[in-house]
Image 1 (tube, protein in one colour):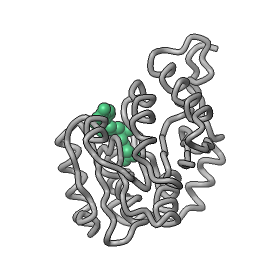
Image 2 (cartoon, rainbow, N blue to C red; image 1 turned 90 degrees about the vertical axis):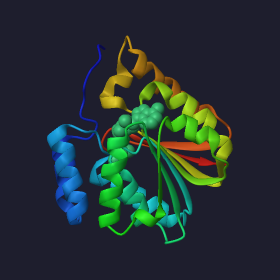
Image 3 (cartoon, rainbow, N blue to C red; image 1 turned 45 degrees about the vertical axis):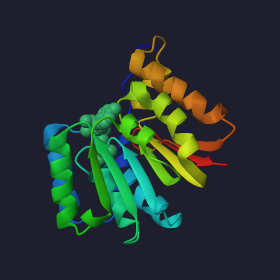
Length: 213
Ligand SMILES: C[S@@+](CC[C@H](N)C(=O)[O-])C[C@H]1O[C@@H](n2cnc3c(N)ncnc32)[C@H](O)[C@@H]1O
């Protein structure tokens, strides 16, 4: 199959899930509008709710996001954590960090956020573990390295989450390009590494959940 671009979830089901989900607050709605206008990739509300749920269910105190963009996914994480939580956000673009901090401040969530501008994997390398949750949403070619660097810094029972692991269906391509090949390598690593237990949820563009054993 040549690089197909598929809807992972049937569009009618995607629409139904959006309709049945509650409205977001005005700040998340503004972020979604900007993402849609500028074609900026955000996780969207279906995955967003999962991030809040996982942060809350695991009582996460230390979270690191690799690739925070303008703070949409961080906003959902922050909503699922207590005031003691420390969330390290990373992005290579200062403009994204500034936008993120403004929105998070307006939502009263900025005190939990430590936004680092620079390469996410450099930040991960320089930080000591253990983390409760890591969320990987950087350029796809770096996914395998993010996992290798990340697992030793997760606590037992901690979660490594990654977005876009079904990569618009390109994981089915006969001749995967470089990014797709990295996603394929990453997915194989997720299921073959005995230090973690993984499942992939085919919502939006596919999100992987791996628990450190
Ligand atoms: C898909 S967007 C992140 C969206 C965000 N997680 C959300 O759902 O709201 C990816 C972001 O990661 C940044 N990025 C990509 N590779 C990076 C890297 N190696 N280090 C730091 N930032 C990176 C890009 O600038 C971009 O803003």
